[in-house]
Length: 116
Image 1 (cartoon, rainbow, N blue to C red):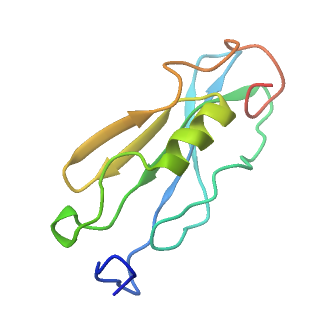
Image 2 (tube, rainbow, N blue to C red; image 1 turned 180 degrees about the vertical axis):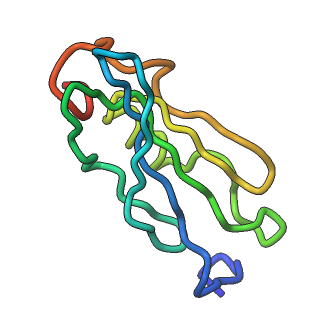
């Protein structure tokens, strides 16, 4: 149990990654991040793909609401996506959530990866 009385599982961990748009062709590509831990995933350093920009980030919240876990965006999720400048999509046991800006900050211009 954690300090909030929620059950911990050695097998549960967050998964996720980045959503890219190829600015030449309009093709969408997904790249997965290395698996995270129980309630954390590092999505701050996307792989750079030539002619592509990150237009979103996705991750799971694998911990059940029935055990007291909050399914929606955490305060960290909200802060991270505001800083990264792209929408964040979250899949939880009770549905899907969105956090961060409605679209990529500064449009599709700039260097590969996150907007400046």
